[in-house]
Image 1 (cartoon, rainbow, N blue to C red):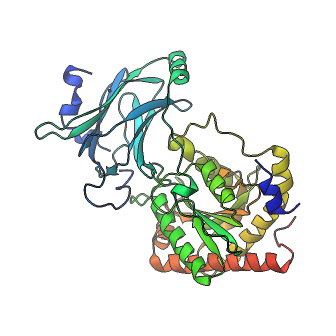
Image 2 (cartoon, rainbow, N blue to C red):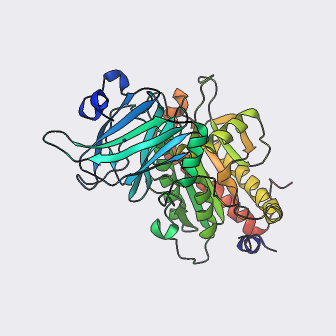
Length: 422
């Protein structure tokens, strides 16, 4: 059975608590995100400020809006989160807001979760109940306000309410709603996956640069390089600041019939920031090659939780036995490509002291699509950050990876042995 043949076989309080009518103290303001994406003025409602008030029994979160919108809110467990879904919003909030919490809210983040839809994800300090979630009309000189009131509850009550909730659809955009799938003209399809996006900013540099933006720029540069060769059809899991669940990234790749999946990321580390740097190329393994690889995979695999995706009903994509049969060949091809990427990047990028690693990244788990995850460098390292935000470096490194793609497909078409074979 061929690799593709096997793959196709897998199947919101009164009195002084009305802080919505009062400004927030500077100490309460804490942006983890810039405006989601450039849009014409007034194209979407604009969120201009946000503030928290209350205590460990009752807490209110208020967003100032340019006009009213429809909202819905629900909770998720383990970790405790409150999710507020809205139509698409342009977030123009003060810098670093949401990073510091108050009362029942530890932190909150926000962003585009799909075309036409935005999301606010609130990390709760414990089990909570959404008492009210509503939007006030603009009055006189006051803007419209989104108001969310949370009250403390116990674990059993939280779980009962969770089971009874009627949740809105939160399905990510399907391929037909996103980039058009390139027509199959016989050329191999390369799927480029820019990590994170939308409500999930990924790693954040001390100076504020966000991984989601860095890797999206790189993904576009790589796409351009590959398309210029004329040898490949190229698609992207996201081409704008949208959140795509990890499982959906895999599904997009398989549904498009991708011959190669390249996921682009940038790492962050809280210790030895001056010493730890460089690009790393990862392949899939249930056993991490080292502790650092395990840490990174665990961090990346939490992306869906960060964005407020309910994973409880996520189906297994394929049966274990078929995964095992097909991934034996897929892993060899993935290892072959990873070796080529490292070989080409040596001349253009600073590599990690151990540039080839493996770990259990969910985004690499398509059983029938050779897949690698490339960490461009560390946003917490000044030298790495300077490089990966440089146009010249981006161009050179995208060219190097494109050359690795050429080598990979040339080797496969020629039937030559795979250097990563076991």
